[in-house]
Amino acid sequence: MTEIRTSPVIAKRVDDIDEAKEAGSFEYFVAGDNEPAGVIYLCPCGCGGIRALDFKPHGSPSWQWDGNTEKPTLTPSVHWVGHWHGFLRNGVWESC
Image (cartoon, rainbow, N blue to C red; front, side, top):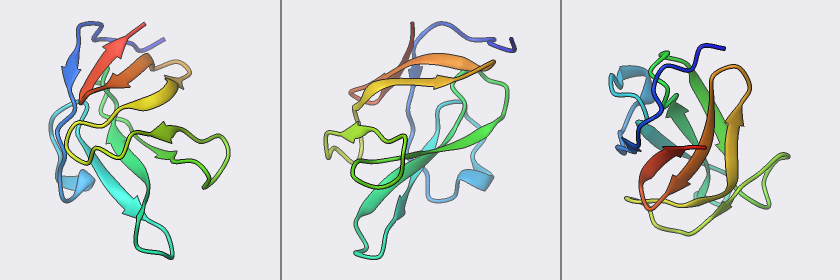
């Protein structure tokens, strides 16, 4: 297990995740309707890994998004096995 960070991490919205340096940074990606279909995020644990999460009803598994573009909340929890497990609530990544 590579989990490094367990304290809350602010989720910072960025324009290009490939240029992001801060753990927990994220950018939205869109579907055919040009609406956010999910996020690409830099792992909140600090390992530097990048992963994507689909919003319902796109993809499977998928997460319910509250529609807040700056301080999002996703349900259920985010579990990147071997890296990090927790919640994104009101723009803050919180470890379980």
